[in-house]
Image 1 (tube, rainbow, N blue to C red):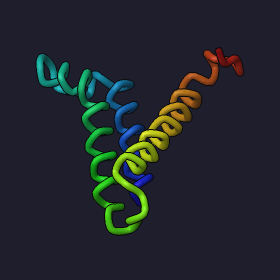
Image 2 (spheres, rainbow, N blue to C red):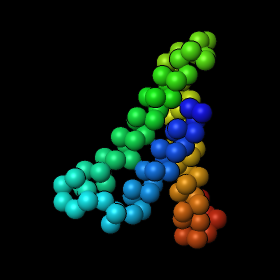
Image 3 (cartoon, rainbow, N blue to C red):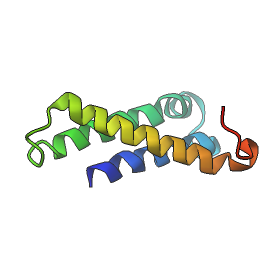
Length: 93
């Protein structure tokens, strides 16, 4: 459940970046466009760490943060690869 929060945050962040015309105009829209994906991801990772507090007492907070940061990196890479598959054309640098 906690990993789906992180994955969902990455996908919602990509939606904010891909459809900026759905955001309000002027300063609130600019703040949401620039900071929205990062704030959503921070909130999701923080809540995932809190949700797993009782489930996994063996792991400390740094280990759980690393786990969810890795999950966010994998989800972000997969979203970007799917989104830009034609541009990448199977070539990775």
